[in-house]
Image 1 (cartoon, rainbow over the protein chains, first blue to last red):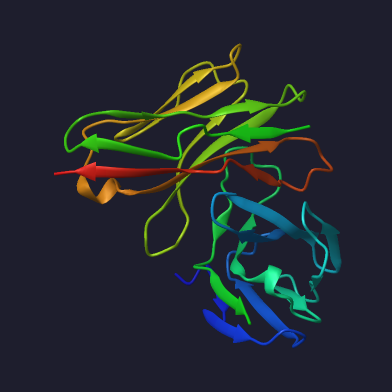
Image 2 (image 1 turned 90 degrees about the vertical axis):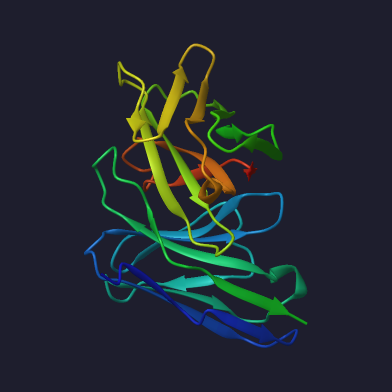
Length: 114
Length: 117
């Protein structure tokens, strides 16, 4: 049972570099999400997707882009990394329309920007 | 605006005792769901329990129960018979049910629980 898989688990970047975080889910979920977690602030939504080919902005979208070309994958891109983007990034997925269904989370990606 | 507040940054509890973690929320939507997640030091997010705004009874899952007081807009997590493995960060989250909400969750700041032997 893979569930939600995030790649990579750790990464160190230099300011100005770009990278893509990959999220893959094998539960056939329609909805997918990217959050960031910073100390003392809980999880904040960056972008989300309600289906293949659709994306929308969350609470903190600036500096990030996303794509959902396939239902099972949701990519988070940083075009020009900044130290303020040092964080732990979580991907999650869920079914629509089933009220008590939780979001299922990946194990997170720890990203440091120097 | 929707908001979740957890006012206890850290808490201690003696092993085998019960503990209550506070969560208050603010929303104008009559239909919503409340979730609690556990995040151990290893970092993963583990779903614990769910309460729907129209549920008549408080949710329970094993040693976890939810003290849901709708009029006060609170959804406190009660952990009975604490175990050392319960030491973790706990997050309260809310999901609004509108068709265009995309199932988004709004998280509180979290409460770090430490269980003492």
